[in-house]
Length: 187
Image 1 (spheres, helix red, strand yellow):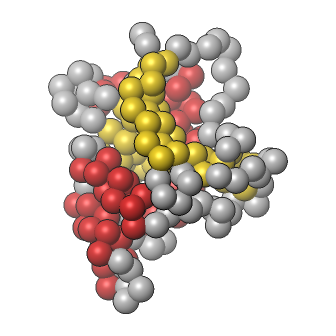
Image 2 (cartoon, one colour; image 1 turned 135 degrees about the vertical axis):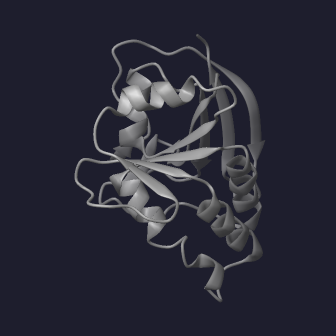
Image 3 (cartoon, rainbow, N blue to C red; image 1 turned 90 degrees about the vertical axis):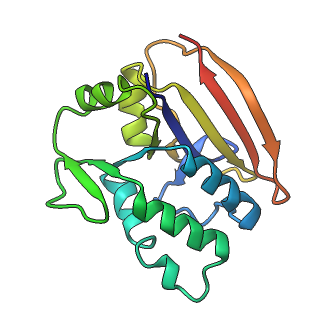
């Protein structure tokens, strides 16, 4: 059976985006980006909702030719381009860049993919992750906690009907002050 990994930057008070949707508070230097790249190497597929797909597709297809991109950013651009992506959206007309659009049946499709041996998937975006979390499909959480308190915004975790037990399996502090926390869900 594959794993579903929910990984994002998060504020100290638990938000994945500011109230206006901005991510300008996220601190990403080359050291942290190298960790993102290592994590991306482990994934056979990236799962996105519409907003996360549009955010990623707005930069990564052309990042390799961006003169301001660092070598680790260019590496991620290559990873992003070659890794298959599944976009779950009822409003998008089409997707590109090695992506497949799924308009309905999100939970059923992710459960089917997760049942494949070794089919590890990375889910980006708190809205999609929230529905998968409520369905009991997320196996691992990777939080990149940024040293900022936003006060309000889009929550990293949704409201749940019951607690989900986890076990800390890795932690690391980066020079920027970002703390990486990796938790496995306990079935």
